[in-house]
Length: 219
Image (cartoon, rainbow, N blue to C red):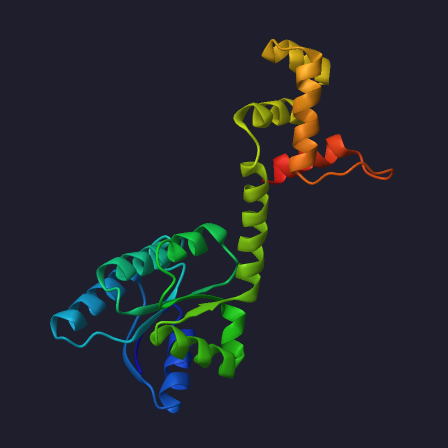
């Protein structure tokens, strides 16, 4: 397996290189910033020597924000045959979403803590190099949680969303009716539909109006 490593921490970059090399893989380049990563892969492509996979940190110089993931997204577009595995200190949903947009073939997103679990990390690198997917369990949990919330609200009509938004402002049904210039009965019907679509059945212990607003605010 031919690998390019992009990591600004020299210690971690050398550690990953040693780890993969000791297991028989060929680390063809190690760089410390996103621009160098792009240049290196482009150069290898010009010599018909593309790597099987790139392992890159999400945050790299000069700003240490999203250079690494932007480079990864660019590489996926320009060199779709190259697997891309990004490493992050924390779960950053926006970066994970950007990376996974389109095809999920040959892509991975792992927390750096996983590197300490050598077998799992190397298995993930190999899987991505072979066109598979490697997602950290914590990343999956957060993305699925957000997806569920979005899907729930997606079931609401535009008017029901408007009513729920006014409810979130703390308005009563009468105040909502006045704001929307509709009858109190119409608002009550919308509110009932909202409860139904959000799966909020009547209960003794929970206030459905509060739960509906919390769902709205957390989406």
